[in-house]
Image (cartoon, rainbow, N blue to C red; front, side, top):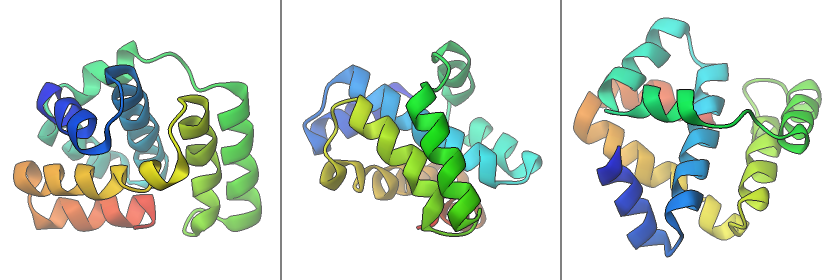
Length: 128
């Protein structure tokens, strides 16, 4: 996990707290949109992901509300799921253009640690 957080900090020019928070937001979105067994595989293949999720504060009211509205109006398999993510990244002080770069970096990391099958599942879950 530390390797991925350092990579996010370096490539995106963000703080450690922003990298951790953005990673938590992506993992929570994946968790909501993946079969439990598939998400459990993601957690195993990203060392420290389970600990990061357990230690993270609960989502803010704004990101929960935005995510819920996005899902209600956009559905699970549409860009509507990005409403909650956008709110989370905004609360972290991460510009949307920078936030959009999180997914590809995390996908690359998962690909190197979990394989192509897992990459396809997480891409689908994140709408990438």
